[in-house]
Length: 116
Image (cartoon, rainbow, N blue to C red; front, side):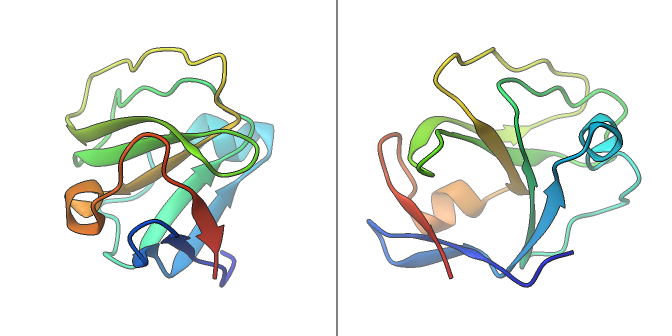
C-alpha cells in the first residue's frame, strides 16, 4: 500500500487518503477480491484498466474511471457484486472506493483528481 491519496480538485474533497496500487497482472487480476471490506480512507487504483467487474466481491463499491491525467471519464455508484461495467476507451485507470464516496465528494464526470 502506498501513502498517496486522491483529492477532487473541483470540490476540494478527499476521495481517499491511501491508495492500494493494482499495477501488476496479479494485483489487477485479484483486485479487491481478497478484501472483506474496504476502509473508508482507502481506495484501489487499477492501472492500466478500461473496465472492471464485481464478480465474487463481498461488498458494493463506487467506481471511477480516469484518464491518464486523473480526469474523471465515467462514474458508477453502489455497484453490487456480480456486475460487469462498460469498457471505456478513454480510460487509463479505475479507482474503486467505498460505496457512497462519489456522492459524499460531489465527484462528477469531467472533474480533475489530484494526488495529495
